[in-house]
Image (cartoon, rainbow, N blue to C red):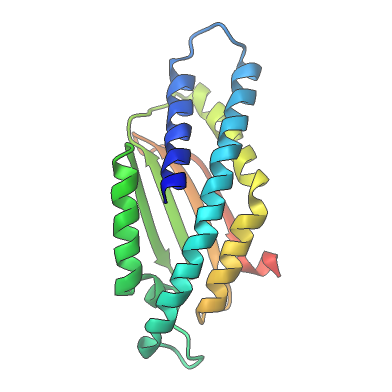
Length: 186
């Protein structure tokens, strides 16, 4: 968890520095630096997501009383179990201490992670830079997110699990979102 917090904090600093950047470096230099920092942050987030999925598998086994015909809970049952909710609440508190609100929830076949950078608001021109940076980071860690979706799928009765990661600025504007399906990991 500490690595995740540090990674998100680094990303927050990056976004804040990009917002404040008024000159001195070109947009290309700024974007390249942002990509490097975000890739490192996304690697850590992806690794932590895979580790959380292992914890979630244990929670799924304990939630087996409320299961479907397959003997496994649905993604929503699994995610809404008391054990998972306590993990999620602790994670949200840690993100909040870094100025990031994190919403994590299951909806149908989707396992959603929404990260809001509370102190950052971007203009339309800046939004493209952030989107490109976040896209590069997510692409660099695609296999870890796919593995996470596959591990969640193995613990639930759903036919497919889709991990959806969304980044928002403080005004609620979507900066970037990407989905990773367990079906693509097979």
